[in-house]
Image (cartoon, rainbow, N blue to C red):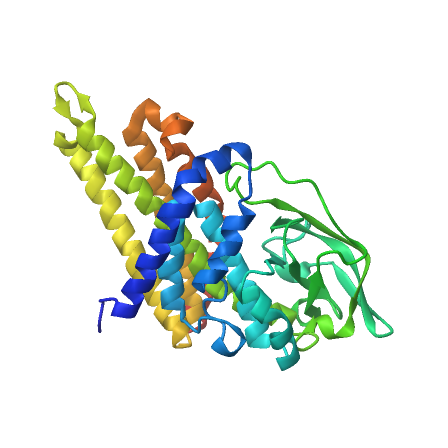
Length: 379
């Protein structure tokens, strides 16, 4: 049992942290306030090998594992969880194409995805089906040598800005076995987008409805096998949940560091806040909470890398525990700042707003508890 990072992992972590400090953190508040999506910054991560982190190297991927990925997204989110999480979703799509696509699909799409010449979105959730993902209604019907899509997807990160949309559609019977995955290129006739959603957090990344109205795509844009789309979607979400948890952890670590500095500088009743035992205990609880979350996250990543039978359960546990711990820590950090924490200029309220959605997306934390309990009861 070795808890130390390898030299390569340390170098990867430092590279991602340096990128975040130089390119994300300085502009994060401005992007949040204006709702600006820094597309040029997002595309630039391709040069660092961060757009195909666990994609195979023959198509331009970095060929790393889930353990390296959580280190990267924790580091990126330390600068901005909104942008770090957006990049994580792109990586999830790239991995799904690498894992489940045909060789022709791998060679066609992945070199451009790994360089960030193309940005990808993941389209599963619909206006009428969120947690009950297998009830999706967006349908694809064969039309000669084409697939014709009709329906809508909701809450899609990158909607209207991405170049490729990996979309779960119904090609057969009701339930999970009737779901397939297809690739829809931006600019395809019949593909349109709703207005950019006004959100509590994650304001630096675009989110919109994606609409398909007699949207025709070539038959070879079906990813992998017909009827296997739900299985692909769930496999993608195992890793996606780790990435979202890592992003929450990185932002919460930033919040803790800000709170620690503030407590050492701010005076009340003639003493620094950090001199009060109540504050010391609060800071100790925050540190312990994040270290426990980090340990579970890294273990879950190890299990997913090694394809252990309980990897899915651990991914669900990590997603639920880490995102809950991260939000609680960020909220505590805001409280330590008092009224200043409520002001936008200090950056605390942004972290709290951004982290709230981490308890919802990639499967709500209630669904995570269902996954864990089912695994326990089935044992």
